Amino acid sequence: MRVLITGGAGFIGSHLVDRLVNEGYNVRVVDNLSSGRVENLKKHIEKNTIDFLIGDLKDPQVALKAVDGVDVVFHLAANPEVRVSTTNPEIHFNENIVATFNLFEAMRKKDVKELVFASSSSVYGEPEMIPVGEEAPMRPASVYGASKASCENLMHAYSRLYGIKTVALRYANVVGP
Image (cartoon, rainbow, N blue to C red; front, top):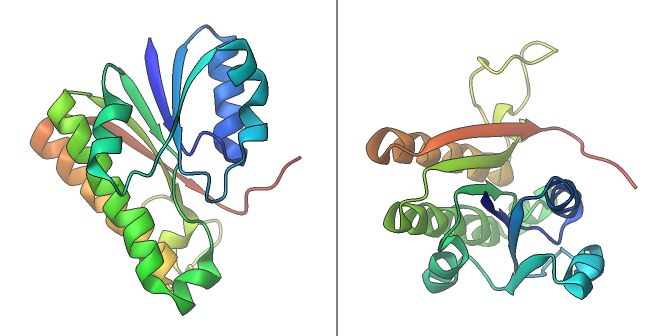
């Protein structure tokens, strides 16, 4: 199976690359390297175990090239800086919503039918109860959270309209080595 990992040079993405390569998947990575690092993929690049594209999903042509020939997309690419979303919301609109729209359009055009989306617990805003269940309403309190909620809504629309199987993972406070 051929998979695409957007944001694959980032912390979570590079660990997913490691896992999927080790399990025998044919992996393509697209990353604009705004926060991801080539060093995270160095062993795979040197061994030629991945197809690595440096590019930005804000460019529809990059999105089309990235999804060409893949079966499943793991969409991890985004600007994760919540503080930046407050001071410069346009960055999150473009890097999260526009890039995700371009990816979904490319998937539709290339008939890619499976997507795993890295969302965020920020879609909930200030929760009424803890723990927060996934049935809790989305009431984002930041532009970052709103951008992730918008992407989830796009994901649901593309699923209903074009038959793309989707799942969103709402990460909270990711830490690690």
